Amino acid sequence: MHGLRGLAPKRSFWRHAQFDTVRVSLLKLAARIIEMRTRIRIALPSGHPYQASWRLLAERAARPP
Image: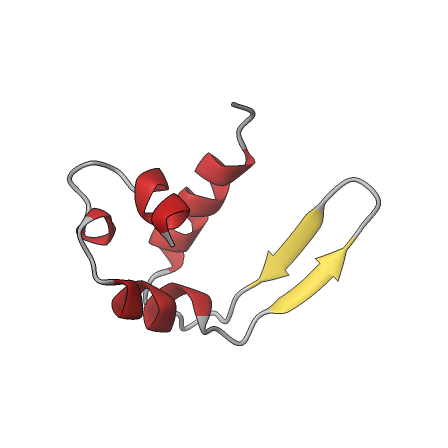
């Protein structure tokens, strides 16, 4: 949870959100996981209200340190 909050932009709502809000909004999703040899794809529902935030956090987490 600290890692997800740390990946959020500094002026983002997610940076200061409570853990329960992050868990319910971002982590408790009905998503389809597709494992390939070189990557993992996550198919989110088309009506998810936080798609842009989830995509940004996923892109930031995938960057090499």
